[in-house]
Length: 187
Image (tube, rainbow, N blue to C red; front, side):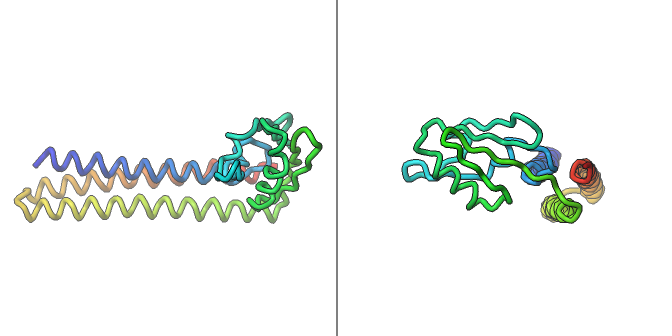
């Protein structure tokens, strides 16, 4: 029975870690004012009939904190890349100079910053929901084991371990949100 409880705890922690990883990926997409190649991470370009990530058909750089340059490996890709950036609806206005695409990242307004903080809080809440769902699944697995003959004390101990895991991961979500919020609100 101990191996089963260990397995439940390990798989629960793995689920909770996935929730944190997903949150971090979502936070990368919430821009905090400084230009970064990752801002274009959600852009896909039609490359000979296949939807391809922008980073696989071009070189993306940030020469300064307010500019992103996209240098396609094939000149013929300039128009499709420009179109893909507009279609991605990231709030950017790409400029095509015939060699590369230049994007000026506008500074964030106070209102836009508040909207981004709301978005970050929403993502954090989703992560907490995932963590709690993992806890619920683990607790029901422990209950099943109790019905199969696991002692009540071992069941209670396992539930205590599951709750402490949950508390740890909820705290990690809160810390990540606090850091992101500070990053967004810093002018």
